[in-house]
Image (cartoon, rainbow, N blue to C red):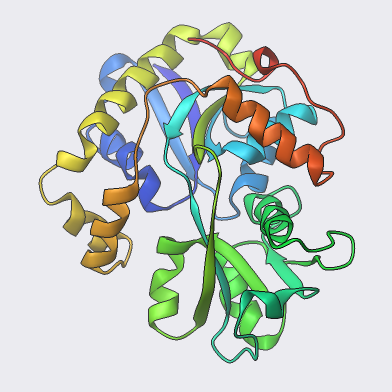
Length: 284
């Protein structure tokens, strides 16, 4: 049986992977797909791909594109979630900051440099018209757990993370959410190390066929809202809202989305060059 290692964030977006693994769908096709949770998000997964800790990553679009440009030997094989990611902009409940404009010049808590939270802090600042050299500062906090501990004691002033994942901490009074910042492109893609694509594209094709079948029917699964609510500690009404606005995909990322990501990254000096889309994409 072939062993392939995959990584992703332990969030509701990836429940379809958990369900197919639980059903042993991959094992039935001779593939031992081993899942690894990445609590540190995009930056940690990019590191995992580079160091051959994982073969596949379910990863933020802008994060993997930036890292491929910077030498990550991987390619995007398809979109996983087509809809934008809604990043909530959070402060500690005891924070004096009441509006987005109050955050100008303050420290954004990020999981790590090169992570989704790092990139989106730049994009948010750019959207606000802030001076990126003066009005944007950072504190590394590793992950969501680090922000939950750090923000209330002044390690970072605000924190950007997927709004439904952080909603329970807004509800229980640890965070206040001051606003949202959606990505202007599909949020999650499936990226795979070049070595695996060259060596075993047939197994990758099988994995994609299985997960795509699961995501096509995901919203119609019996009691899926209750399953998500219980597993991820979400209110049922929040889960239903999330399901209503979230779209999975079985198609490849479009070239215009790649150009938009590169344009944004280049404008805010997070990449020093743009590369052709064929060096980022791989057609199975």
